[in-house]
Image: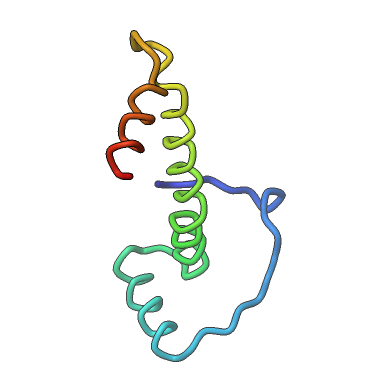
Length: 84
């Protein structure tokens, strides 16, 4: 997923990277022709924004039974009784 930013949209921060990670980022930067900062932003977006997208999908599943005939409670009650 690609995000477009302007400087007004971002906050400046400083991070410390160990040598191995930095070398990997340098190589990846050359291969993808992207700045290291862009690779880091992409990775953070995938990790944290991506997680929110999953939450949205799960949230959209709520109420899925409202279109189905019958009441879902009787199904869950039946499953609970069978586990007892």
